[in-house]
Amino acid sequence: MASEISREIRKLEVRFKDYMKAKQEFERHMKDYIRIFRELTKNLGKRGKTFSSNEIEKLLRLRREAIKSLGQVLKSESNIEHEKSHLFESYGALIICLETEFEKLRS
Image 1 (cartoon, helix red, strand yellow):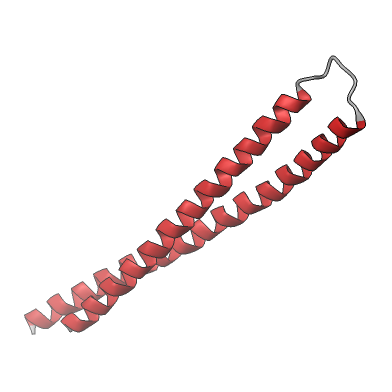
Image 2: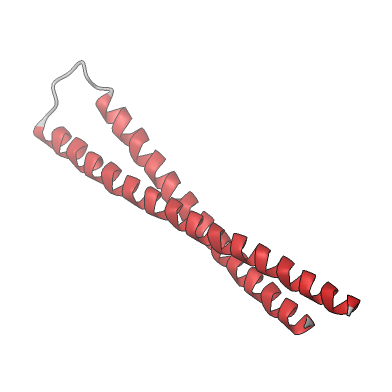
């Protein structure tokens, strides 16, 4: 029925919205990850001098942030893949519904 196609179209729209939201979240985490590494690199670039205890603490804090940030990047990227799999599922379901409608036309 055409209502089945309409239902699958609505599911695809929702899934596409979820996918785009996951991509935006990934982009936000990736930008943060890059920012942390830029700051870490800038602070590590002062190799010619000895580091004060405050500078070492800052480097250690940035290292922890980098590790945590990587975890967020990986998790958000995996969420994109999860949402993408739902899109693939919807593509197939929509085509099957369409084919079913055309089969009914033949009968």
